[in-house]
Image 1 (cartoon, helix red, strand yellow):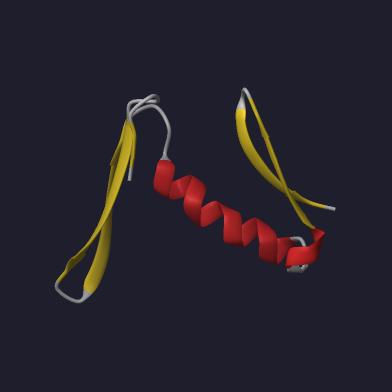
Image 2: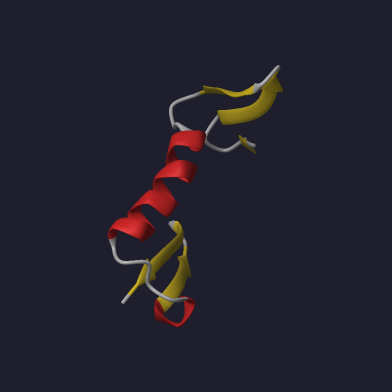
Length: 65
C-alpha cells in the first residue's frame, strides 16, 4: 500500500512461517488497517446497514450509527 500524498507506505510479506509488515512515513497504514476490525468488534459488530460512508474535501470516513 502506498499513499503518495501522505508519503506513507506499508508492505506485508511472508518470511518462512510468519507474516511480516514493514511500514514507513508519518502515518502507520498497517496499524490503521488492523485497528478498524478491532474497533468494529469492540463496538458490538454492527451490521452493514448501520454503516455510513461520508466523503468530502477532507477525505472519506466510515462510521456506524
